[in-house]
Image (cartoon, rainbow, N blue to C red; front, side, top):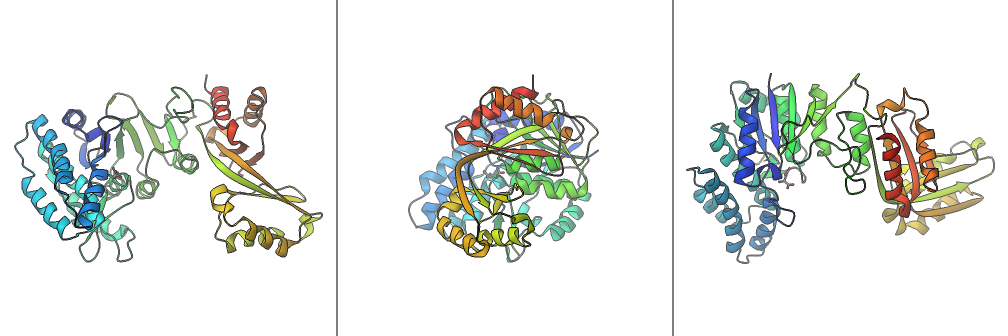
Length: 436
Ligand code: ASP
């Protein structure tokens, strides 16, 4: 078995956290390839090293004095070195970083140093080999990730190694300059490494015991999802579920490697397993419920709409011409509704409405704003009758007015629109209708 283990920023924020990480790695010899993030927050008001690096580089870029900011970053690492009683020194690395910042080496290079330095420390502490991701993770000239070149070079390199630390978040462009993924991108590196070594499992270690059925800021102590499919995760992620960088799914999914979300602070907890397919039934019929506020619904009515070929296309044309993407489109016989992000729509509203009128000559157009959308997601809905009834009666009991319903033909989700003001209550009642 080969396991690739990625540790997030909070898992590597201090010497104490490094110790937990080492315990986790040595407790399972299959955990051979390790992808670290930069040191994250040690407590909620703390600053992530990546953010400190961005601020530091902002100063350097304007030729302002950045000595103190860089020293504060060096101190974060020194505290880890001292706490672990390591003999390694990062002094020469910081000399180089200082010179590179003075020479305006770039914002992405600056940010990448967080993972790079943490990788050096972790490799030293574990006694693993350190690989600089700039030499193994590649981007194309246009800035997109070069999956095939990376996979060729990285798999050839790792094949002969028994273990290694490969820092997350960055790689290099064809001209050698460092480039980073978007924020949270160490998840992507972990997934790329898992594909390269054809791992049996990609463990993504963080500070929660897996994906939660719903947002813990809305529902107190929600249950953990034991198994979730990639498609379910995608539906929930789209509605604001924030577990894993979206782009981290592709490399492992195509290679058929499951992801296990685990908690560094509670390593015995099973966490959440993310898989392509499963015969395991979700514990609560629904897998998760998530949502977002701030949508607008544009309802267009026209007698005999259903007989008019191309009506729908012309309505959508008005949105497309104005660069607005739509979220959902429930329709009736003589009505159709287009749901869009309020913030995107507001500024272009009059132009869009005028175009709809011109293109379709409707009987009426009506706008409802301040709508929140909830996605109730679960592969278990397909085989269970009465899911919709349970959702709607729960909302009814709580006197929450439903403003829109949309069920995809995949029967994987039901989308419900309620007023922004009812959003939190709606999430709560739906959660409690399924999770006892
Ligand atoms: N350190 C980077 C960030 O804060 C990448 C990561 O942690 O995944 O976004």
